[in-house]
Image (cartoon, rainbow, N blue to C red):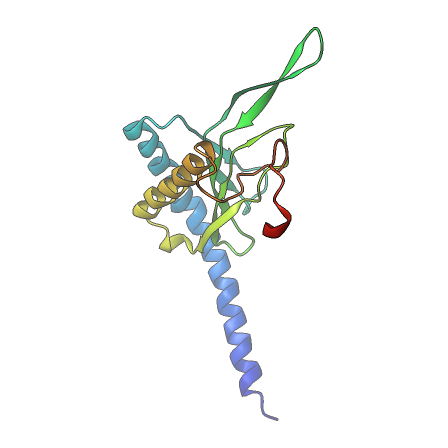
Length: 177
């Protein structure tokens, strides 16, 4: 029987399982602290109004988020004698540990609660723990800020969706549809 291909696949499978175990150890021993320390340094050095949140209720599926927090959107629903103010989530950068120990980096876009559904998160990349270096975190924060600035400074000069699709949308002439 020719088992060379099966034997090669078994070796590959075993190597992947060993990598998963090592990536999880790396997250616990090095990566988690490196992410937290570098994000805090970015906050401290730039004055970025952000905080770092840890999601650690599932071992080996932890997440670290640089969140820009929530604020009053300035929009309120008139309910007669009172008003209900709508809250704006300002966006976040998330480092999520995947099932295989690799790290998925994603951006969560700003949105106004109650006005519409938030835009789907944007996955930036997936990295092995040893690939994630401090300069990458700076680039990730820059990407977050670029996306948030674009969302906040939305106007009709830039044809894009900003995370909600309701309100006052002009009718398109029949010849442009």
